[in-house]
Length: 213
Image (cartoon, rainbow, N blue to C red; front, top):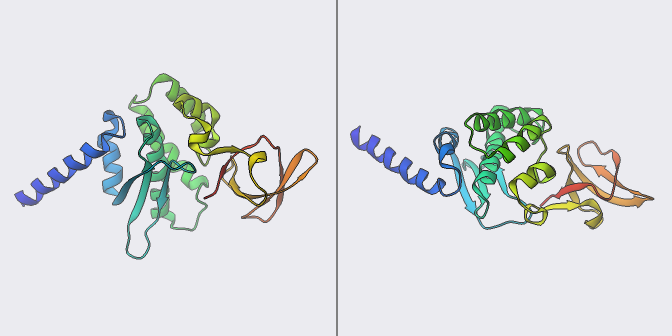
């Protein structure tokens, strides 16, 4: 029993040493609990222009997988982890019976962010931006300009695009979390098809969206 406990402690120390390079030290203990308690496999990836992180549910005997880009600052990585862990917890409770960024996910994400904010981890500028972010949760921080500014990350780095810059037929995520296909332009706005409802909506050319991989 002593050897088992000792091995577990060594593994935990090694895991925290690696994770501590990417998130604030003050968040390390409870973020480690998020990852370990839910048996999440964490992957640190190269820089990806279309995403900062992602979540993959269990399939074919494989467990939960969360990835994040290696070149993000610590506060951005922490927010991304909260986002993806919220996907994990939502999947554990509802499987694939709810929308990826629906009210169930939003509730979990808000709860995890509140945990972080209660620890006074973030600088005031980011903390204040997160207060507004919590009141109107988007499917991605790409779609929250105020939070992007607070994190000092450029649009290009985060994959944010203006709708008018996308080719026709491109799939994109709007600020409501739904996926649309860009259609033809009707005078001043673009006609876009909502994939889930099959209904058409009009978007202004300057709408900020995230391209679907």
